[in-house]
Image (cartoon, rainbow, N blue to C red; front, side, top):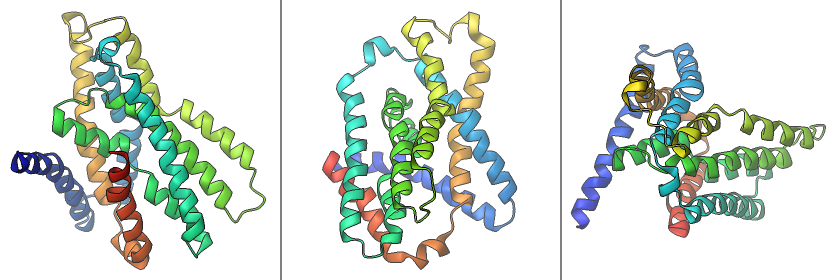
Length: 251
């Protein structure tokens, strides 16, 4: 069983990292450009990923599958994660100018891109992962702005205005809109896979299928290892917290 679990883990993760490395290689070879990466990033965030999440929610049976304890676990653990990392970073980090950036690097993840990719590789579809995104991603944005605002050296910044804008940006977030748009189809039992929706469903599926590979290529293309090496100690510390400490606590 342990070997089977290990092989399952490799099958779920290695293809993702291959695409990320490919994006980095293509960028270094000049096949991908910064202009392409910028446009592709907008395409994924504003089109492909929202369509993917719309598809997954619209084709799921929310009434039967929704798990309130899972939803609130995601929400509460996200809040505790950010508050805990921020609290301990404020106490132990000597360079106070790095507190905001380090707290974000340690706590914030890519739930919508990498999270969905991992879940899809393991289960074949994202299932209730969109509910995790609804519970966690808005808090990512809200806590990030609060932490960076409080830790900012710009004393003239209007903190209240920044936080209000964050709430508005959450409401206008294309990922959240895609999930909310899919809810009526799921709750009302409208089958978008049926003959009546055959043409739009095929188009939706084709667009959704581009989300993960394009997003991973963009992640690799935008990777700048030299910047990480310059701050190697906080980089390694943040990586340990994000990949080992926090999963160990919440799992």
